[in-house]
Image (cartoon, rainbow, N blue to C red; front, side, top):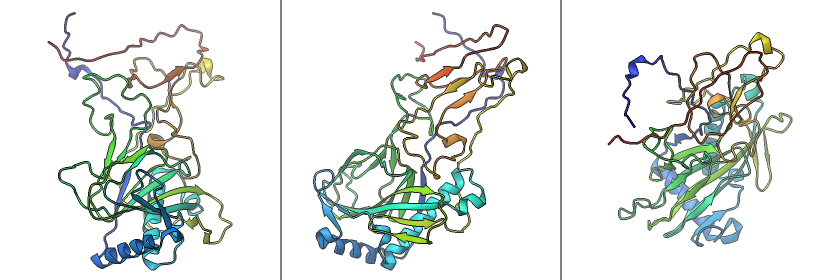
Length: 349
């Protein structure tokens, strides 16, 4: 087969829509050393009181102590500060990623389950997600020791949520740049005070930790509703409900959202607006398995659902081959002609 070389200069301007993405937000809590020392001492002391505060052996190989899920309910001032920081961060994420109006945002109520884990040498946590809410978070109180001979020690991996994204690999997709690359996303586990927030459907795991110092991480799930007729704070053993903080939106970088292209419906099928429409279906596994006010109004790049594309004369749409798609019935009078193609890419000899 002949190798054909084309000049890219003949192409019209390219528009890329970042659809079906998975947002991962990162924050840092800057506090003096005394704050962290007192907080760590408090949680280690709670661990020493056994089942009053939690239980050892629920995960991995029995080397993780997990507290009860009422951490954000506790009245200790240090823990209240942690709860307020995590809540303000998540509220900022929701404000940035959803299309709620200011009035709607002020009515959102956040329900939490929050707990901490203390991991000792050789402890790990297997593949799982957080099914009890729309958002999840990890806050590193003490990232533990580094183990130079084990560079993946304690690594927290968020796995690619796109089903079948790597089922076929060649030179056309194995060198994709971030964020299009197919991979697991490794969280930085070495920084004290670092908070990561991500959708709860994302599968995650924590590699075995080989440090000597106990490692302490706060975990939380959140589900969000619009019921305003409750007290400012309501508590029971496992949940805390907070209204969003009235504060400026956090600064986010590299979060440009591309709107999917839209075109007018032809007059001859105006009564059938989906005539011949192409739908690309969300490839994120379980991306909409739990919906609430915190994810049902996400902006286009992160929204759950199908991407609607209408054919136009001369328009070319290119997409990953793993993406499930369908074409709705066409009700126009003229024959419609489309040229589909598949491509696999290799290095020339």
